[in-house]
Length: 281
Ligand code: C2E
Ligand code: MG
Ligand code: MG
Ligand code: MG
Image (tube, rainbow, N blue to C red; front, side, top):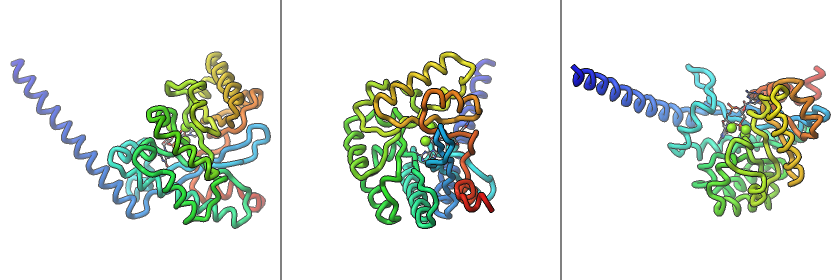
């Protein structure tokens, strides 16, 4: 009896496994397809000056627009893209689209914006990020000074010796480097001094506790003041309420990003948000 149950559950388990494997393969093929057919695109979320609310930049966030399934968020495919190496093409596509738009906006005399692009740990490790970025800047005519690359703490820490020269080279080109999701890894601010960084993005989990949670308030305050001592620009991620923004204002945080101002938007909608003429119309 026991044996039967065991065998029964084993069969079920292995069916689950092959089902998972099958889904994974289907997803991988679908992602390759999406890349080929131009179904991957970039949305932009505004970043604003905390004190006066002006839009000073935007983060580029990849979206998969499937004709059948609709909009697929990066949380559903970035990891697969990293595991399959497809992130190399995706990363290049996102950077190219972002730089192309940046060049177009500048030509139309729209307010100058710092455009920020997420870089995967895979790109730091297996792709020549410096050459790729230099090539895309040349191809699109975008200005390095208006480009920022975001990397997570763990991506930097894991391979310090290989990463630092890449960051130095990118900064020498004029590109800014931001550390993303700060506070979620193991790093300390003291350790960060080893890396050439310009911007520190406070993870949105800290903002969630503001204003109610005392620890969140104190941690946020500490990150901002230590970060400023190290001369970083501080961006707060995931700002959803006016109370959170008021708190950041008191602490002298530089920039904020979050649903309070706007979710990530498709290009046309984003343009409408930032173009003073379209706003008046
Ligand atoms: P991230 O770089 O930390 O991006 C911020 C995420 O927070 C975005 O999710 C954004 O939509 C979301 N967000 C912004 N404001 C708020 C808010 O007020 N409340 C809440 N709850 N969420 C907010 P998204 O676009 O789904 O991206 C998730 C993650 O996927 C990104 O986190 C980034 O790690 C990764 N990702 C996105 N685009 C790319 C890309 O082009 N390349 C790579 N390598 N990773 C990307
Ligand atoms: Mg980011
Ligand atoms: Mg983040
Ligand atoms: Mg993240």
